Amino acid sequence: MSRRLRAVAAFVYDLVIGDDWRVALGLAVAVAVTVAMSRTTFPSWWVLPTAILALLSFSVRRTARRRA
Amino acid sequence: MSAGALFIAVFLACTVEAVEATTIVLAAGLARGWRSAGYGALAAVAVLAVVVAALGPALTAIPTDALRLVIGTLLLVFGVQWLRKAVLRAGGVTALHDEDAIFTTKLATARRAASHQMGTVPDWYGVTLAFQGVLLEGTEVAFIVLTFGSNQHAIPLASAAAGAAILLVGAAGFAVRAPLARVPENALKFLVGVMLTGFGAFWAAEGAGARWPGSDAALLVLLPGIALLGLLLTAGLRRQGVARDRRAAASPPTPVAS
Image 1 (spheres, each protein chain N blue to C red):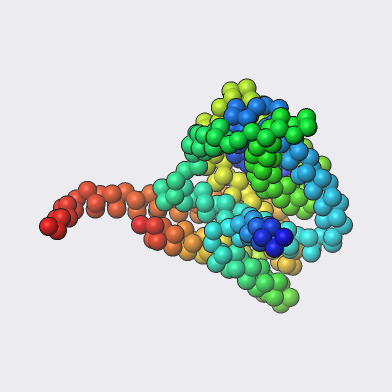
Image 2: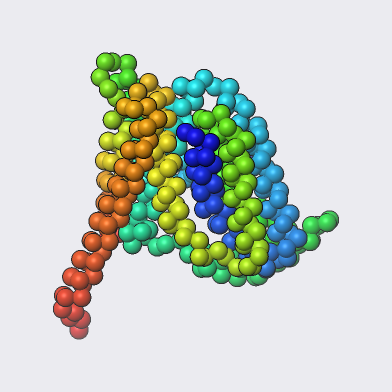
């Protein structure tokens, strides 16, 4: 039973988190920052596009460097 | 998001997954018989339909902002991973998804496995192979249908788009009886990655309480912007690869120690 649960957990992890957990964590933090900033008077729409730019560039370059 | 845009986004995403599932069902059908492969594929589609039918109404009952925050964040994470994979493949860092190679491997494995008949099922191996393939690839289809559909309160339309993609790809695969290697899978994956990332970011930010400049019109800047980022990263990877190859060709061969 626990082996099946582990297999399901691994499948869900692979489906949602994928190959680079840093990207998923970074995006989750960016969403949390957006929530926090939206409660202030500062505009917060720019946080997620900036996070996508930074995290995708970082992850792609990091993977390319490691495989070179 | 208009109904047409929702249909196109879900249709393209499901086409990619349907091509991968069709390769496995074809291998199961050719190696173990079409009846077994058909049973397995239909059983998996039924399981996925039940999942969508059960979760869909439950999701649409959640307040819009909370739903957009949670679903948007999931879609964003999922989309960036798709885009990352497509950029790495297009940039030559990882191998392209090769349907022909996958088909050959699956076919050889399926032909070696022992046969096991039970009741009206002629071959359990064929059923299991097709069931697993469709269920695994189909989970992503169900995820996309549920996320896009629930956000727009249009799960029937999203399901119709997924069904159309599955029927079209399945019929094409069955007609040619070979993997659909000509489908530009990586280009589709790139396009879908852009859409999932863009809509995910848009909904997650809205759910978080952010207000986009220009409201829905912000998507007209966000989506091309993400596509441009993906293309620039791909071009950068290709340049690095070419420079590395040139350096390797120019450097003298390493002397072998005796």
